[in-house]
Amino acid sequence: MRRECRIVTTYSFNMMQERIYLDWNATTPLRREAREAMAAAWDIVGNPSSIHAEGRRARGLVEDARDAVATAVGGEPRNVVFTSGGTEANALALTPGGHKQAIDKLIVSAVEHASVLAGGQFAPDRIARLPVHRSGLVDLDALRMMLAGGSPALVSVMLANNETGAIQPVAEVAELVHEAGGLLHVDAVQAFGKISFDIIELNADFLAVSAHKIGGPKGIGALMFAPNQIGPSALIRGGGQERGRRAGTENVPAIAGFGAAAKVAVAARHSDMARVETLRNRLEEGLRQTRGSVIFSQDVARLPNTALFGVSGLKAETAVVGFDLEGVAVSSGSACSSGKVQPSHVLEAMGYGPELAKSAIRFSLGWETTDADVDRAIKAWRKLSSALLRRDETVLEPF
Image 1 (cartoon, rainbow, N blue to C red):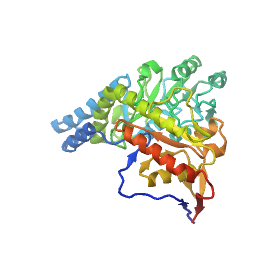
Image 2: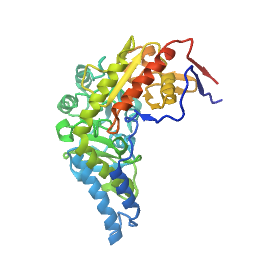
Image 3: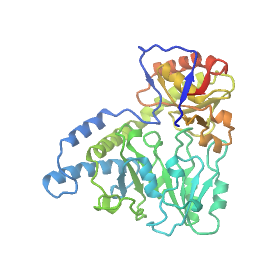
Image 4: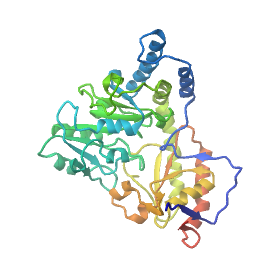
């Protein structure tokens, strides 16, 4: 029988208050420019694979967007494959066949997104986990040892972690991987639109991005591959779309929205993120007032919008509900499923114990976040913390 979780708390909620959204790493609001590009695309009847005028018009929208996404990550348009999102882009890259050189093993960092940890098309016994330090950064010495000897490997290391925001030393990873004759895949979904990077500087062979993290629509992403790569084998075969790398009629409105969002995100990135980082730092200062609190990965370079916060004794799933009742949307590395609370695999990989790993709350800000939003979040935490940190007043019990 399916079991659910019920949260019993001691605080109240004003149903009329305006809500504050601090879960931008999960998804972002749709930018006006993306919405307008999608609306215009809906009125175009042609199939982008058709050679008549209507088809060529639809094809033009797809190729304009392809150029915008390629420009945003410093690559070539012909090396962009549109997918249904970051998860499919990662899965497309993680295949043992179809690469320029033979690859039969996969190394993934222990803090990767679930879509990478799943291993794509590699057999489970051909997948190895790369450990990370307490900071959340990958252990380069361990990687060097894992690459020594044997056949070349495909290595997957994300550019920025979706929970902690920690930015990985991808260029250093690439040097080690290529010296060993391997290939590097980079999940750049969370970094896209927040920090400056390009596929050439990173020296990555494959790079995944997603539209809904930068103000584009959900359900569209892309895999970029380096100029010297032939691209991975198609996962979806059929009509030969996307130069034979991903079959199926292209989602023209979503692709158009992706391209429009990419243009705006790149143009506004510096000013938006400088302001957001100031707000993030002020939020963290308020959170640190709680005795025993931890800001994870605070001593390494992080995304300017991300703060992963924890305090021993806190039940993160209860805190997320508490913030929600106070009108503030945040997220957690924990999950309430089948009556069990799972700690963050990222924090476990970083060496934190289950109690602290289960306490993590992620605050992620964006271009619309204001000083007033940060003030509300800090005020909500001050209101909630006394109740949430007293076990006799906050109870988690199953139905």
